[in-house]
Image 1 (cartoon, rainbow, N blue to C red):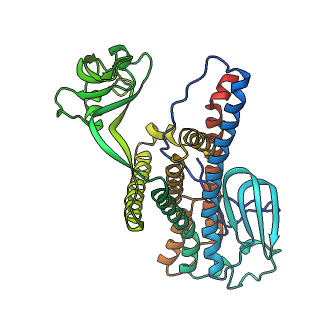
Image 2: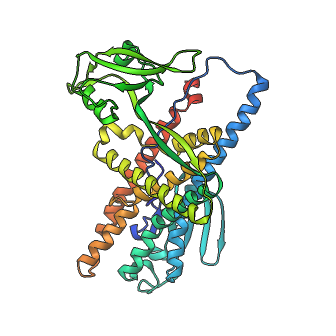
Image 3: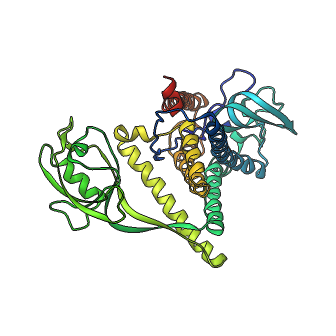
Length: 421
């Protein structure tokens, strides 16, 4: 889960920062599809291991750099918005915990910290040693509602703008991927020992027909049919490529879905729309702009819809929520397979961080925005500081616990860790 939002700014002294004055970022990177990983049964020769290790280090560094840049952009949004309004800022940090490097430029301390859960911009509103009077008009808490809304929302705005610039750069350099829909439903993965495996379904099969469906079934139609058919025979027609062959052939199979705990059927496969991806390169800047807007709109819709599905079906989709370890692992695989894929990786992570931070939850930007809007609805009467700090402190604790859980879980799921264990 990397969040890039609100977590306590690690100050030199152990005091609880005001929720409005420390934008730490912890973002849940949701519904990032983790590629299948294959454990190697034999250790490669030493001569081959060195280049592989170097390539792995380079790909991990590329993914980590992308993630760090995204956090930097988000925090810079908060920082620039505050500076543009003349609001006092005391800290700008990437990461949390002990400082690996720090320096001071004017009144602001800049730091790179050890825990890569995000970053924060710190404000001196509650620092008795800041030298600012409690009623200083340039403290964030004393600014009118529009100024505070601008500062808090600027991180999300920066991520959205950065995502569009990434997509635009992709359009100008390598082109934008365009999906051409093909008949059938793809089966990317079949669980060993599942009903699908027993029936003879193989990864890479394309389901072309099922009973009671149109000639070209969709993923939702298949899912509904399987759920409604526990322990019943379901004939399916699949297309597959035989070993050593080039052309695909049609195969008739019968699958009997197992019965889930809730009484619905399941067959143990991953289903995906069947499509072919081609790259479209623009002829000029106008074409690039049109392609970038179209791709940005598509990615934004996909990310926000994925977040909605995750929240509505959290018990089933919680495993798809990834932390910084898993995000870097996925990014490293993307970098190894194709440097072009880093464009989409970076854009999707940006959009995920923006979407998560808009949630009206304590310790996220959306939670702070909700409190400011509540204050505005109360006619400008501020929420008692004790109440505000209690809400944010509890949210910070929850987000930190989730972040630690995801880091531990994702680390234990890494291939080399599994081999050690």
